Length: 432
Image (cartoon, rainbow, N blue to C red):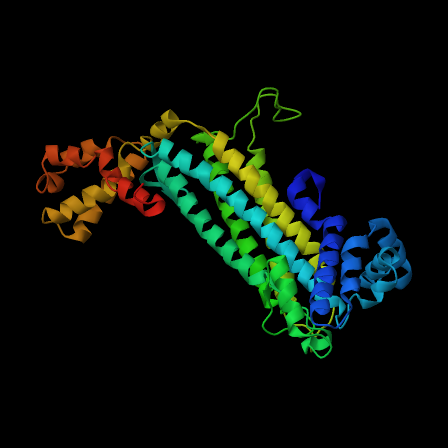
């Protein structure tokens, strides 16, 4: 994790203190369940809660000798609990602690990411309604196509991130499983009711069938959901970067007082935040392939997944958390230039209405092939800067034979393109 791209809320989830705290809770809740079943004395379970402590530095010190992190933790715990510590970890294996802890951490991370998306959705909705009818040019292949509104661009992003939110909710629910099933997952030395108790206390569900580990297809799906969300971040960031280009300048990132854009060129106002988001999205997506490769473990377990998850777990969630909050800020403060949008919209002298002319000609009795030929012939002349599109159409006898001047002029009404904006907004935001 790089502090520059980390928020404390997410970084704290992956801090050693939180990890060992979760380990302690797993062991202590398991002791409670074992005591209720009569496997260990109730006084022992009570002692774990009352005297149980850990020190990160001490655990690290012990691990340097034992070369085993869970044993190091249990040894440090026993130094505080005393003789009753012999009843801790009864019938359990290290993966019971590690996998259940990872499930808790990923669930905590997902909760924070979902809250981040809610923040972004609120900003997108506000800007969508603010610019619901702000005309701008829609582009396909980067080329002027037909008019849209800037509000529709924001509404589309809102719908996309609402889908990402639903995916993250599903991913959180799928990852939130608990395994306290012992070596190779058979419950040979621990009652399944212990797992049920621990799961309930930690807000998890018992894993229906584990080997010695929780199946890694769950984790692969989790990181895939993060990656799709990251790609949506990049899509919107790329849109803003294009709109900020000097030749376009329909919108740009907020440039704060005292901000500097270039060490060499004092005039520069660069889209640094959205460029940064593009890079962060690549980092988040980089976790997907390792997560997929973690699914294929040897037999009931190996630890080839462990080193991978120690890296991608913190990195992917920390980077995505930072990116979502940054994007929400970009959207919230985005500077929009309606006058530039209108200027760009009019740049091709009405060519953006070519489809309406094409359709009107077919309605007027001209074959589609001939109508396309007529419209394209005059459109290409306008592309070459030879004149005005509407004037060319009015002067063409084949066109005027099907459409009057008044009918042609009506086809250049910008409002026609926005007649269904309300319908689209209702689909995205509901009747309210």
